[in-house]
Image (cartoon, rainbow, N blue to C red; front, top):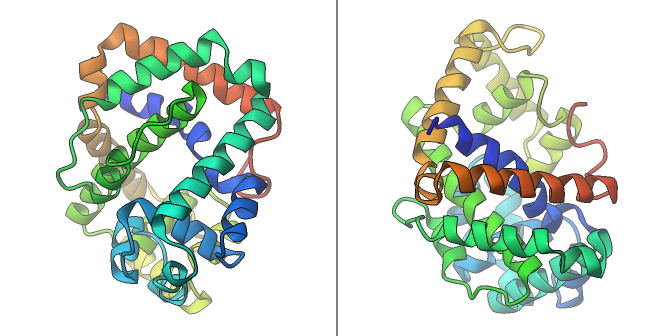
Length: 283
């Protein structure tokens, strides 16, 4: 089985997972339990499965976010709502969002039920070593509803892959902001207008990191990725694919391809329903 299949599977599951970041239900549910609107919802919502951790842990596991804004929200968030309450509110938000986007019939479709079975089987091969954020999510109870279990499985597989990606970046000597800039420089990623404020970096920090990447020959003066930068990113993605293969090797090629087919159908249904964020990705 070619390792690139891990990347393909990630691309169809990612849109399912990110309903928790871009749907209005998330902000509504998490502010209703006491969190402040804005970045606190994201930081606390994603970090809550790890418990009442401090800003250093959140910065380390999120990797490409500025530590300053995180420290303004964490651990304050835990004085407003417990991590357990945040986890429950976030799941309730995803429940409401998926029902709105897919409809009750869509949420209960045979395709969702089958995708749940395949994704859950894949996650059984994931292990927690070196992947703290994945490990925290893996300690949570599985939702009973199949469509929520699909979202939970997509979250597990996403954070599992993410842990391997961070390991590859650390090995290559690419800190979080540099990794973000390289990704944007491909022209197939976030817009700077979204990425910089959402990750909390100042203009000075952003420009200093860009200057360093120019000096290393990884991007040019127009912030476009160079051949050397493309080669590095290709190596990083290949390393990430290799580190993410355990669930797909366990599932097998035929079942993995079926998961990709079903995940693609759900992804497309979400996009048609308007789930995709506006002004976030370069089109």
